[in-house]
Length: 194
Image (cartoon, rainbow, N blue to C red; front, side, top):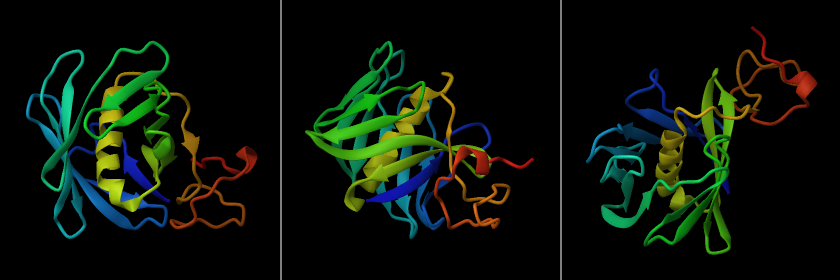
């Protein structure tokens, strides 16, 4: 099981987003845009090969997206209406997503097996999605799914983010700052210094 960190899309990071692991190593690139029909986001390996894509096939209140892995269509997903908790299904792939677009916390399952958990975190002074993924082979597709969930959450107030200590500006328990020590601290020792 590996944790990956994807910066939430906003006006300051249009274009390529580097997906990093919990040791701050670059693992993937997420490139593309949303908005109109046929727009797409692509996940590239660090050496430049396209691994997965998510393409917008319709617009409107409940837009539809197709998922591709290694050039083959593996599923489609569309936004559904939910009052408190969202439930989405990825056709063909047979994954279902439970969670809440307001809090940003989601769980993705294949049958009864957990595939991925998406948790909002605050790193580098910005909002990120922490992806806890069970199998490395599914990481590119999981990044696409997390990107679409982040896109759908835009415009909705998110719950307070889970803070992680890993950056300059965060006080770690031993008084040092590090890019490679992502772990939780008691709330009184994990204060943002301004």
